[in-house]
Image: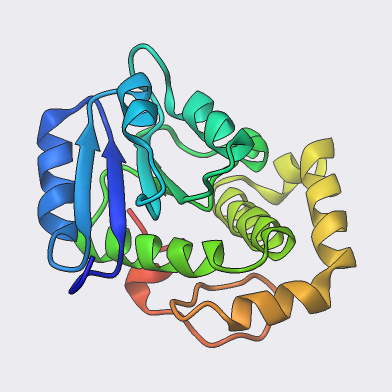
Length: 198
């Protein structure tokens, strides 16, 4: 749509949060809303660029929505916002970013813009960047001792390390930076750092 950066579909069973996200996003995006996962998938079409989903919802939760989106030909960016603290299981959820409630306006806008840029990359690169983003979030919330005992985490690290050159190139194409553990990239703004996101 002329004058906007794209279309965001907000799926959340909390009407106040739907209204809040709409208010935050409306200046830059066309915004559509749905009250649960089933209704959200029914509203999905080729005009949707980003899906902003809650994790815990009636009828169809955000994890199921993300899995469904990953199998579809339509391939919007996916940002999950949840009160659930991310754990190692996040590595298996097909989202481009994850924010823990409560969230601030700048964090949501940065996340949506970053996810849009990630989704524009070829699918293999996008999957690497999205997986690396989820790894960052998991590393920010779980202790090293916990992660060292998790097979899924170790497999993720091995996968990303084996594609480090491709991953670095892919991150350089993302205009909204994040702090990347152990890598030399431009420093993020405080709002976009996973350690400072609410």
